[in-house]
Image (tube, rainbow, N blue to C red):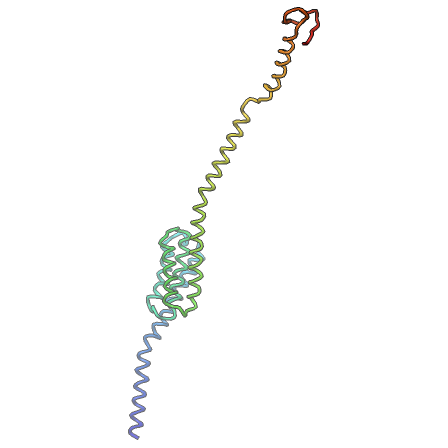
Length: 213
């Protein structure tokens, strides 16, 4: 009877100790959840205020709230959600600031999710977001390399147009070609000979007739 009581007491103490050890984790998870919802509320207000979106500090306030979710419990269930949303906001901020640091911060958050939370549903989302960022970066580099080629083509077209204008402003060559047969005819006429006389130089000097040899 005494043994049964001792076993019951021991079991009760064990359960209490287990609950005591698990309580900080439960309390931490609940607090991380609350912090996530507060950060989400901050983002909703920012998203519906075009005026606030113009200011960088407004974005950083919401980003800090999502980062706080991760820092509060780095291994908890809400940690990857906080990192992912922080990365999303950094991406949106980069579209407005064009700062490389914002884009790198977003990519860093996604990589941390992929490496540290392989079983989380946010891992797949982070992979898609990271792949999209890299694709856009590659497309931008290709566009920058193609830009000088477009400039070269434009310069080539300009040269052609200048050559056309130059040709149009030059005097036509047909007049010279048309006049040449006339001068040749005059030469042939001037070389006509009168019978027994030297070359005739003026019309009518040979009696009004020419004889061609």
